[in-house]
Length: 313
Ligand SMILES: Nc1nc2c(ncn2[C@@H]2O[C@H](COP(=O)(O)OP(=O)(O)OP(=O)(O)O)[C@@H](O)[C@H]2O)c(=O)[nH]1
Ligand SMILES: [Mg+2]
Image 1 (cartoon, rainbow, N blue to C red):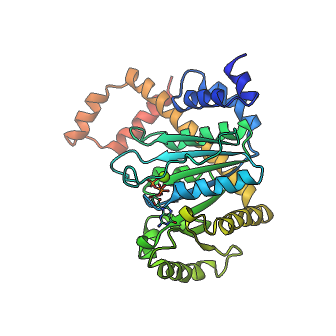
Image 2 (image 1 turned 60 degrees about the horizontal axis):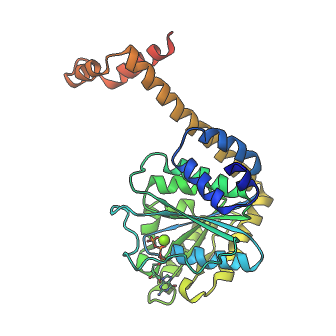
């Protein structure tokens, strides 16, 4: 039996191997994805993002356990902020998702952000396709909400939970980080800590204006992930968002938009590689750089000229 056959028979170690294959873009990974795509599209994808240490893993853990108790199968992708720049909870303080069932109902995969500035969002999206094709009912994706790449990852999801904590203080902070725009639901985690009521009130204030002319009223759910408190409510709100999204047509529009973006991302990567290959043969890039450096021409003029050059035979 090939690894793919084993995968198709529900073998999790085959799943793990295929995910590595995809993640490392090994020879033939595109052909593999071409096999997986038609099998995907059934899983619901939920994103959990927010500041380092907010309790995203703890929440994903708790939500996964709820879903499993309901007889569902759950795939988890944790995009790990292993880089010192993105921070993350202090080493040792970070929750390990080890309380999850080991009966095959849950599969957890970490993806390190370290050293993978390019292509991380695409890789995460492809891994989600693999989990979906494997037959998980839900794919939960955790990522720290710190920059564009992380926001791009969230683009893979149907519903996005932004996790904040009382320490996030000023809710306007979240707005600046671009988190407000991508949120469908807010979880104010560590609600056991002082200041929870303040941030909830501040968020609700801001959302009142935003929700005024919108049929979707962004819920703010206080949670205590480590005490397993209010997780039911959070899950209810997530599923309510899916229902709203399906009824309003947003769900399909969103997924179609994701496919469109995916096509352009693939094209951009391929065109760039093809152009570089052609220009390495046809143009003396070092010389062109020198001319721009010395002020004899400029990158825009050169860009137009090189584009014509790549289009010529
Ligand atoms: N007091 C309190 N602590 C919590 C709660 N939820 C999580 N924590 C703690 O917060 C710390 C970080 O939790 P994680 O779940 O690892 O947070 P995270 O957002 O996944 O962290 P990174 O992935 O490193 O960004 C851990 O020590 C948790 O035990 C909560 O509801 N209340
Ligand atoms: Mg985490």
